[in-house]
Length: 340
Ligand SMILES: NC(=O)c1ccc[n+]([C@@H]2O[C@H](COP(=O)([O-])OP(=O)(O)OC[C@H]3O[C@@H](n4cnc5c(N)ncnc54)[C@H](OP(=O)(O)O)[C@@H]3O)[C@@H](O)[C@H]2O)c1
Image (cartoon, rainbow, N blue to C red; front, top):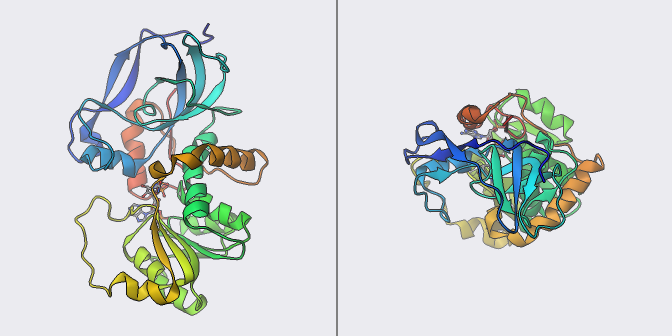
């Protein structure tokens, strides 16, 4: 049934204690091999995608819909190849390339998953892993929550990041004017390559001043995953009927809550009929399949670039390095770990 020789054991990453820190919370363990049961497929994971913020939150047990009780399997997304199918599985063949997303299935050398869950892809490459699920989240957040329209002015924080570089490109494909924000000069050139009309390094330029001076009518869609003062600037400069999408808060997710004296939010929103909208992909599963199909199609037709961060990480033991690399803000594009 299988083209790939089955080992007797394989490795995976688990949380063995909740310390709040990724490296000290996690360890590599071996798991005995088992064949897929009825309705399941067995996948050999080739690459895993790094979701450092989510991962660290797991190690703090602060993901609202998850109760972490060690040992707890880690990692969400992987691309790989089907190795074997359980009884009654139709539509898959050994050797098929797939992308799969499920909590506990990513940071491991093999996974067993319900046969209905993987998405068939042409190749098991890191670019596909960037698209699913980061590109999918970017698409759902921008279109369904941000309700982006042609001609909108769209501002994106962490615009060169795993999620952000897709938001930028999808907005450009819609015919929007895009302001791309980063914290590093190195990433400015990349933002220009992606088509960003106004790249901003917020460490060198005052974002409030740039928006006030160059965008006096405001931003129609502000897509924020950084939070802090960038979020404040977005809310301040949101346009008439504009939408601020809260898609994360990388800058302070693991810090004490900061209390900021500000006028109440309605003072900033009411007269503009503007809104602040939370977006967490977990809450919108109904859009996943359609968006995945569309994002892959854009990529296959050469309309969309999938950026993979060039820093190489190889093997289960380097996942902690990959997480720390992203948490230090050093990445451009999706951080990926090669598992073989
Ligand atoms: N809403 C959803 O459903 C959803 C889905 C996936 C991810 N997310 C969230 O989206 C965010 C981006 O995730 P990602 O995996 O694509 O990461 P990423 O954007 O590739 O990496 C994080 C980036 O944030 C920027 N950053 C700004 N302030 C930072 C700080 N204090 N420390 C570290 N980095 C900082 C850095 O870019 P610059 O130097 O360019 O600023 C860094 O490269 C995360 O907050 C994640 O939780 C949300």
